[in-house]
Image (cartoon, rainbow, N blue to C red; front, side, top):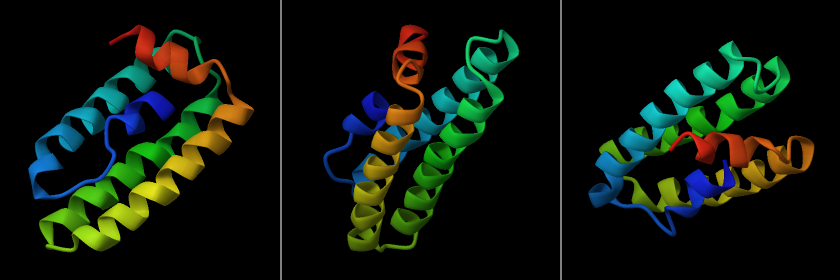
Length: 98
């Protein structure tokens, strides 16, 4: 999750397609990892907040509110750090399927 978000230092309307690709990647990858028991259901559920947060950022950018989108990105990165503390193997597993 940390690696996914590190792709974005800040976001604006030009980031929309990259964020969409990341949301789709996370959706597919997390499903595979959960289905193959590579990650726990708890890790899957926690990581869903990152995917949801990226979707919120997309909506904010589509509405022309980049400042709020960037504030949300900062909070999302903090959330990713918290998830990493609970599930330190998650980031490596997600990135390992890239």
